[in-house]
Amino acid sequence: MFQTANGIGRAALSCYHALRAEGFDPLAVDLSALFNQIDMTSQVSLTEMPSHDNGTLILFANAPETERALLGLGLRRWHRWRIIGAWAWELTAPPDDWVRQTRFLSEIWAPSQFVQKAFQQRFSLPVQNVPHYLPAHRHATAWPSPARRGDKVLRFLTIGDGHSSFHRKNLLATMKMFMKAFPDDEPVHLTVKCRNLSFYRQYEAEVMSLASADNRVSVIDRTFSEEEQTHLLWNSDILVSSHRSEGFGIHLAEAMAAGRTTVATGWSGNLEFMTKRNSVLLPYVLTPVNDPSGIYRSLPNAHWADVDIDAGVRSLRDLFASPRRRNELASNAQRDIPLSLRSRPYAVALDFPAERD
Image (cartoon, rainbow, N blue to C red; front, side):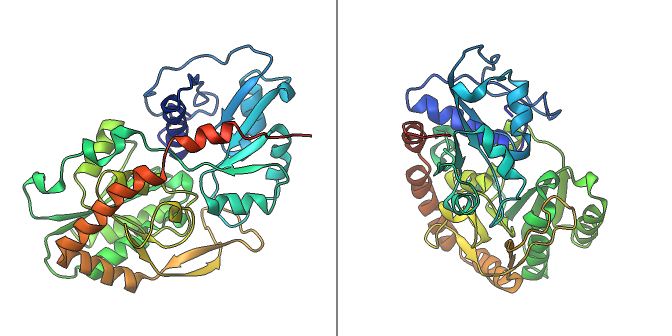
């Protein structure tokens, strides 16, 4: 999905850059048009699917779209290809109907140990943990300090895409946390960056109702270009995620690599790279999955996290009062991300002797 500004598109781009960093010469074949999801210009040169009888295909697509993607790529006799399903998922158990899609794969790449464990409990084929890579240009050395903005407003940011479930991203919790933490006239601001908010009218109404009660809260609902996304992150000091679950949380990793302080629910795939040393991890309670949007159907034994809003309030207040603490966390994150999210695991995974029946 190289022309799609969602998590799958960003993950595919990370893989492409990682393979090039490891000396490979990958071909970038785009599926955005096949799934009617073109909403940006590709950052890399695209090519057609080669008409070879065999090869290695790393397929970044939602699991239910696997068979359609293979047909769209012209792989009618795909049994001679090594097909790696780079699947994203956010819950403790995958849907039962995904088992059928594994028939077309040689193996699965999961972006975190959290996802790997969920898949291994359900699927019989090999599942490798291959965390997303952040290219060098996403690291802190390429970013100016927020202090150079010239104002004294502490700027918070939260991000969510409706097609990935606003209930999972839990933007409302972040908004409530922010407004409760700063009830007076403190010099703070929260940007709520959305995509596809207008498709979910009830959630949109709740978001806009909260935002209208505080002029320090702004809501943006549209797809950003890479340049706009970079500017938004540069213009922010603290990224907050009250997510109920993340398969990985690439936006959190990008913020940390850029030297921004991060606050997030201390559960799920973001623990692949977030620690108490480099970020603020909020407490939570596990509850059965209930997603009114229907994006995540209720699954037996599937749970996600409800963040402790009061703990979040205290954390935001503490960060507001302590620039030193903010800088310490951001500096630790700058050092940790390049060490934990490297290109090497992609090369190691490609050498993995996967077997298929």
